Image (cartoon, rainbow, N blue to C red):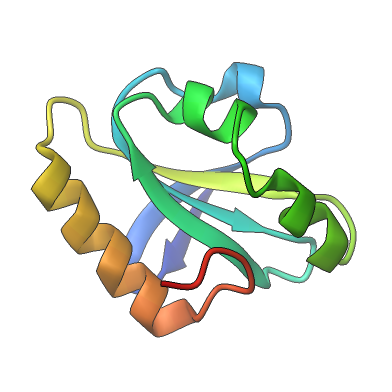
Length: 99
């Protein structure tokens, strides 16, 4: 499924990090109400979400199941991923990981 989040087309939700892409990109963590809990970027989306240091914050603040939405950006630079991350973060004001 595709979901427009802050003007970007994210795919998901992934409820199990084992099924997330191994590629680079931007992730958005939401709960069942589509409340944005966190936003970030990584060279390996599956590894980052599976081993995230803020997952306890997600669990504390979620209403219902937690899902990851991803915008795959294979071969992208860190700067380009961070640019998307900042734009999404600014528009969604995530509960966890505020910067």
